[in-house]
Amino acid sequence: MCVKPQLTPWYNITMRFFLITTRGLEDVAAAELSVLLPTVRDVALSYRRVTCAVPATDTAALLALHCAEDVFIEVASWQEIGKPRRVLDRITQLSSALDLMPALEHIRQLRPLDTPTAFAVSASFVGARNYASPEIKLAIATGLQSRYGWRYLEEEAPAALSLRLFIEHEEAFVGVRLAAQPLHRRSYKLATTPGSLKAPVAAGLLRLAGLQPGQTTLDPLCGAGTIVIEAAAQGARVLGGDSDETALATARTNLSSAGLPAELYHWDARRLPIESASIDLIATNLPFGRQVLPNDDLTQLYAAILAELARVARPGASIALLTTQPDALRLPSALRSRAHHEISLHGQRPVIVVLEVRG
Figure: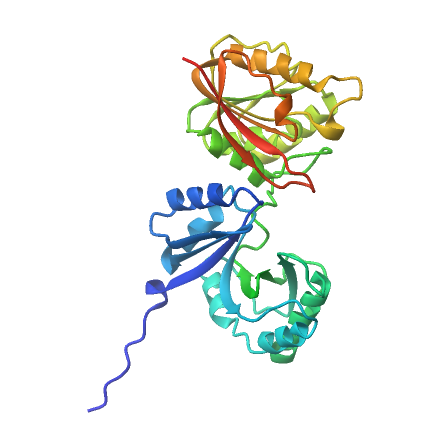
């Protein structure tokens, strides 16, 4: 008697993914992932990356992550990807053997996806190499073109398939982007300002501060409004403001694009028109570096802002501040430090300082 093999239905398959994060927010993205997806397994952290296994039926939830910059279906992991230039030939050879069809079929379960005729590649690595990212991208493109005949695009396009190669030590991870565009590219962000905060970093500040739906949340230096919008998207009642009218106009444009409720004001963060002990949570990107006028004394500026934040926050409230100058923070007696979290941002290493208002 002939016995037919039992094939596993696609919805019973567990798939592997990797998230790309801001350096320093790997643990924050992993914590959000575990809360959002209780079925996630095998979560592991490395430099700018979180790997995990997720049941195929639950992967749509990955598109709702706030703290990850991007998410990819892992299609291969390659060994012996070292520093010599001859590795480029090995990457081309391995790329020519990639079977991308199962990943594309899974993506089609989540969103419309035509058979691709064009693709783009992004590549990054940790440590020094004898080759550069553009050379890695071309090596992958050469291999994929020999297998599929697709057209390689040097720049990403909305309709193109996007692949990502991430090399750490001598291991390379290859993935296909799950979403149509990177998660960090929020559709609401129609306008920006110099030094505008990336959305996943804004979401990371709010998570480190412990944001809960329904909390009254404040960003006293809102700039383009990214923190305000990320907090409103998570169900907070949000107040924001800035002393720069141009920045405030930008924030209003983005808030209108997001279609979320929040209150925006023109004010001086050192003299807030807010009732004392009325705010549950504060998150803000403090002025630092080029954002600070030459005549400003950073220590005095921070002291005035902190005194006002301590006044408007209720006892037990959390305050998350981003700055490259944490030593310039002189905490008033009403505030105590709870955590410091160094990240990498625009070539700098700012710190997220989490404070608590004493009861």
